[in-house]
Length: 271
Image 1 (cartoon, rainbow, N blue to C red):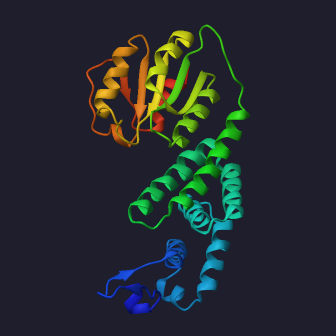
Image 2 (image 1 turned 180 degrees about the vertical axis):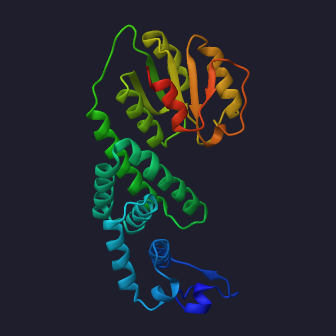
Image 3 (image 1 turned 90 degrees about the horizontal axis):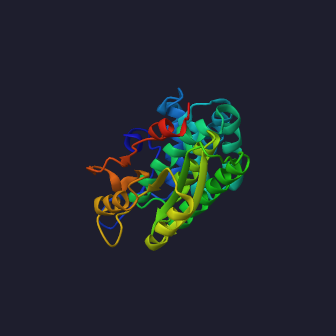
């Protein structure tokens, strides 16, 4: 409708007359969506130049604190490889909402949107890596600012990603959540070999394991992997989340599925 009625878009077409959209089209659509969602009529936007649309969108972002505006700003920063836009958006959000709310209300929805853009072929691997590394740096800096606590009566968590799992942003944020609530955290990182876990368990005796599965393990199903972890470490609780765990049900009492950050908070908050 925007294309036909207002000529606001001019998508390219294949030899068989199928529309397709490039990065410039996506930038324009995001800016139009931002303006339209904040009171601008499409008929009004259609009279604006593309430069004016983007400028108005930037001005709107500077004075409006709606979460969706910041999510869209991060998407534009990713597409354009614009580190300054990223830094400005993150700094404003952290100041306005605090680090934890920024992560749950803006950064997490942003990565959900990235997943959709990835599936539609809009986002390139380099663009995702660019923004993921910037977010990763911010989380690590936030973690470094927290006190590392130990003690006999303090719950001890061991966090890791299984073999071939490399997406650690959610797990790093879990480190922040747990440490900010005065839990002891041992972070093993990405791609941890299965055979290393027993000896590490014997050394540290964690009360909880926390891991995330975005893809099914190569050697077995996600359900089989989690059942094996639960049987291998019966005295610890195994907390797990991720796309590859959806729909899984386990009969083991010590294997617990987490569907949201609020469920992790129930364990992290120690009273």
